[in-house]
Structures are given as C-alpha cells and as structure tokens.
Length: 292
Image 1 (cartoon, rainbow, N blue to C red):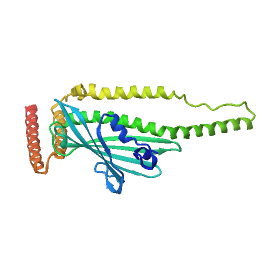
Image 2: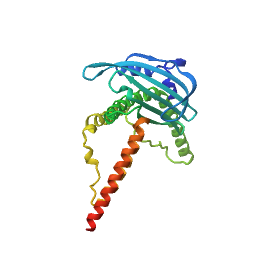
Image 3: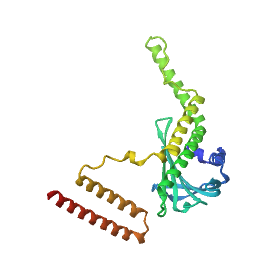
C-alpha cells in the first residue's frame, strides 16, 4: 500500500509526490518514471530495484531572493512485509550548496494483519569541509523535518481509505465472535469494548498542533539554547581535567579526519600529536608541583 502512494499515476494510481511539491510552493516540478535496475543507497547500503529522478526549483529568501534548483534521486524496494523509499536531495543556487546532500529514508513495515510501522530517518552528508557545518545541519534538519512530516501526513491520507476498511472488517468480525460466544454461554448479549477513537477532524487538528510545536521548537528555540547548559560539571582535579582533555582531543581527531581531504589528514594527525605531547608535559609539570 505505501508503494502505491509513490506510483505517481502509474496503473491508475493517484499522483501524490508531484502535487505535494506543488503544494509546498515548488515550481517547474518534473517527476520522472521509475526505472528498473540494481541501485545501492550511498547512506544506508540498501539495495533498491527501482529509481526515478524528480526536479524542481523555488525561490529562497537570503539577502535577496535566490533561485534554488533541486534534484531528488528516489529509490525503492519492497517485499511482502516491508517497503523502503530513499531520497537523495541535491541543491544548487545558494552558498555552500555544493558542500552537502541530504539523505532521507521512509521505511514502512507490516505489523500484524492490518497495521503498519512507519519510520523516517534523515542524514546531512557533507561532501567537503565547511566552516558552517553546524548551522547548515541545524537549518537543513529543521526544514527537512517540516517537509517530511507534511509528506507523511499526505501519504497517510492516501492510505486511509484502505486502512479504514480493513479496520472495519476486523471490528465486525470481533463483534460477531463476542455476541456468538455470549449466546452460547447463555449470558446476556455484550458488545466488545474498544479504545476511545477521536473523530477524524479532531485527530487531524491535534496532530497538526503537535507537529507545529515540534517544528517551532526546532526552528525558533533550539538554535538559541546555549550549549553551556548541557556541559557536565567542571573537573575537580588536574587528573580529571587531563582525562577529559584527552577524550575531547581524540574526538576532535576523529571528526577532523572524517571531514578533511586526503591531503590534509596527515597535517591534522601531526597537529593532534603535538597537542598530545603538550598535554603530557603539562601533566609532568603538575605532578612535580604537587610533590614539591
């Protein structure tokens, strides 16, 4: 069923991704056909059987209005119990756009007879070193989260008619079995009790409010929260301070080597080694001072 929601008019299925992008104020939307082949996801390592290209553009507000061109490479695979759709998002038209791509995965897994578990993951992959990685990751994460939540809501609406009919059939069967068992046992007729279900309009309003709060927190509050609030308590001794410094130095080395070019990796390792020697000298001087 989730695969049908990505069919874009194939086999008489109603298009969803093209209209979704147009509702998001995207222009010149072109949704290509699914092409069969063997494709590997760079981020997840999953193997996919079909791929298509989606392109569009939109005006982004920076110092002025900039035309941003976007290319989505979408891949999908499915079996009887799971459907996976991966989206690789590439952008062009604003500063540092060539430094990163955004990877998104939708995973719909069968749970029982009539239910689905839907998981959405996102990863900002940097193609080369950039001094604004933190800001890019924060802003891109917030924008992508907002768009993917809106997409998920549209997909769920597309799946709703079939999900509702399956649920109704299950409820009718359960009620029939309950009444039959009550009559056989000679007990008064009873009706099975079910969890309270909110009317669909109320449920949609509550979900929209929740999504709005999440998006508001990520975009308006989180970037301004001082990182110092999450810092651990300061070390109480020289030994603790040195231990913490060495751990952070090791983390700095790992992160720096990941984002650096091959030409710079040796330079980074050499600088890290020099810092390590300086820390060792500080430790020796501190030890001598404490003994004297």
